[in-house]
Image (cartoon, rainbow, N blue to C red):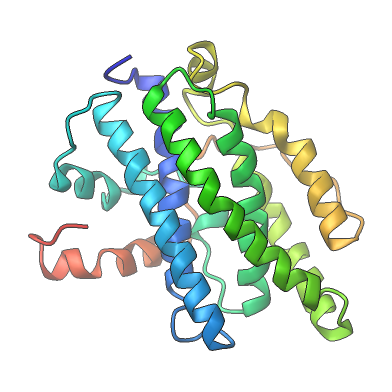
Length: 253
């Protein structure tokens, strides 16, 4: 497999968009996190996610080719101003100005992300399988970071209450991570991924219930978007992401 078919391209693109936007969201906590160690941790995690995104965008553009992807092509895809191009989940688009929401989203996303990387670990697309092997080493530290904070904060009455309130706010949006994306059926048939991502949702829900020690409402998945619609938060987020590019179109990522 060299160039990607249309369906497989859509499948990888959705993964890349999620990683890109989560990386951006983490970097926005630099300098305003509750304490210095979290400034450093979120900047490091954000850098990892942006690196994963760059790798996935390169696969979208180059498939299995060993030839490096031109930086300007990559930037044109990663910072495309057309909302119709994007396939990101709404959880990655919304802004979290409250630390409890930022931490809970971090845990929800990285727990789901582990399951998604596992599905492509033995991909017939060698570049994607290689990306999964590298990413999982970094993602282990991401999950360890989030779990370490939750271990300390959830048992504290006030902090635990705030974190569970954040979970109640975010969970209805977070289930959208598992919305089938156009091309997923084709990706499964080609062995690019082992199974549809939503087959791992019950395991994710069990982990959420266990981690937060709380009953969860039934997830409403009556109207999955296929990741083709953008949330109200997407426009402002993309504007912040494009600030440098809009000032200097010659800049590269």
